Length: 524
Image (cartoon, rainbow, N blue to C red; front, side):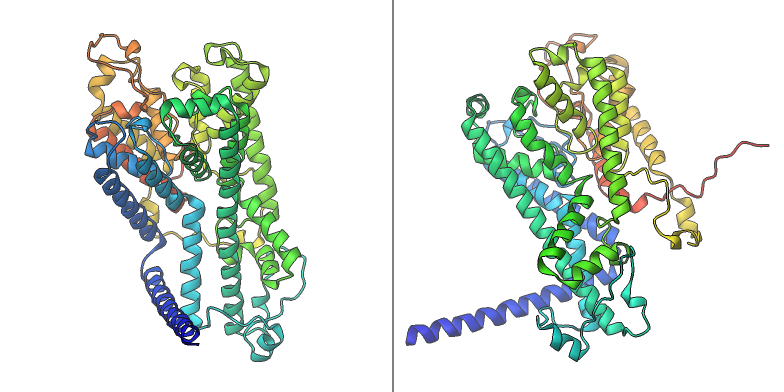
């Protein structure tokens, strides 16, 4: 009896402690979200995450007894936190504990995870606004009787908002929106965990059962569990880091592994909105919850930027597949019989090419040496990396209210430049900092390679042409080839500018309408 009373008392204490912690967290989150713009919240979050990652790399020991430069460590930490995968240090230098740290940075810095934090902030703000119970009762009869929630009128029209009705009071509407945000948060969390868990399970099984793939990790001293978790998290977060120095080049003949990893490139990036909408449709059918109906019919009013309408999702899928098809056809046409395809049969060439072009807009993992690819393909990759992930060919207007939207701009809005303008400035600055190398080593340091590196960092993709001692015009006896990105050979000033580009690219959604005040016209 005494043990039972002790357990009951301990349970009561834990509930009260968790309740206090939950209220404190909601208050703090609501305070932050209310007083600061979302841009500054995300900027501070990414900077703190990068700094914590740098400190973790600094205090932990690498696998090889080498001294790592502080700037390179911070550069790599920023690259992981912003999902950019720009490599300044060989990946096999890092120990198993450091690889786990990278995995955590990529998971916490991924777009899906940070968007879930946005949902939490929005929910906490709405909860503080209406002072509602975070765990409402499930008895709908009581809810309606108490006036806490409303019954959503049936409507097949897109973005039908029941809150526009005169019979709905503000408190009920806020309650409905809060419930929708809560359910959406759980749906995103379930999607995030389940997709990566399934991917980790399949990749681990493949690496265990396929001798050629398992032998690669054994020779490099990388654990199968670490590799599988690291790679799946990195791919889903659109980071593109791989624990091997050669990225995925060493696995280009393992078509099964490439096909297992390939879906995560889409699921965590361009096709995340269609997959999320499909998940909500399934949950609506299974649970019969009216909140899921509201989410599907009022995607714009919910305020979650990744929850797109049916029409937008359809056009997004078509656009993504269209871009991939164009890249696939061009890559196969120009590179089918070149050196990068040597040793591959037809099936392996098709899978490797599909994997490469898919990563051009998303994760940035490579199965081919980009420095050996033709310039035409590199220019195509630059264009693909520049395009935002939700770029869509949308020939019709989704909402009539967009037609009458006012175009008033503040003075600050008019002074903001476009994305392309900032990228040109960054490229010019890097050409200035690397001007000596541009003159003395033009085959490695050229404007095309610098442009590809900058656009890759801006797009948070991670493609790089690397650096080769064989391309030097003036032979340097001290030069040693290493598996680092092109930017790994830049000066400290050049790397610092690229760090700014990675942050700018990760937060580019806040400036997508920049430069609209400029009007380009021809005199008549």
